[in-house]
Length: 123
Length: 107
Image (cartoon, rainbow over all chains, first blue to last red; front, side, top):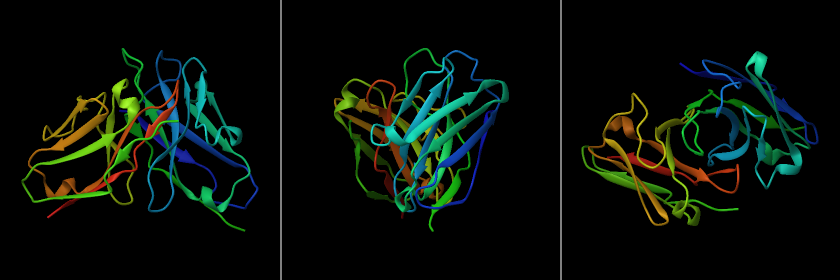
C-alpha cells in the first residue's frame, strides 16, 4: 500500500516562497519508472498539474508556472520537496502530492494521492 | 500547451448509465486516465491508460477512447458515484494536463 502525506505552512504572505514536503511510503524513487508529482486545486475549481520528478531525477514543470517552481527529491528519505516562489492570493489552493507508478509504457497518470494540504495566501 | 475539455455537469438516474467525455487533440496520441473526487477528499484513480481499472474499483466503471475523445462510463450508477470526475493525459514531453472536471449528480 502506497501512502503519501503533504506537509508545510497553511498560511503564507504575498511575495513569500512556499515550500511543501511530500513524504511517502510503500514505493521508492530509486525504482525505475517511479515518479512523484504535485497537483493543486483552488477552492471550488479544477485540478491543476504543477510538477513531477522521476527516479532518474528528470524534472518537469507546468509551462505556465515554470519560472516559479522547483522540485527536488531525497530518495533516501522518501521525500519530495516543491517550492513555489512569489506567492500571490491566486495561489491559494489545496496542494496534493501524488505517485506515478512504474509501468511498461510512457504513461502520465497518478495512482495514489496524498490527502492534500490547504495553503492560503494572505497578508 | 494542450487543453482537455469536459462538460461541467451531468446527471443520471439511479441505476442508469452515464457517459462522461473528455476532448483534446493530444488524446489522438496519448491515453487518458480518470479520477473521482468527492467533496473534501483527494482524487481517486478509477481508470488508467484509457480502459484499465485499478484493483478495488467497481466494474461498473469503464473507459474508452475514439479519436480526440476519451470517455468514462458508469453503468448502473449508484448514489455513491455522485462526485466530480477529472480526466488527465500527457501534454508535452514530460508534462501532464487535467480536464476541467465534470460534476455527476445521481438523481
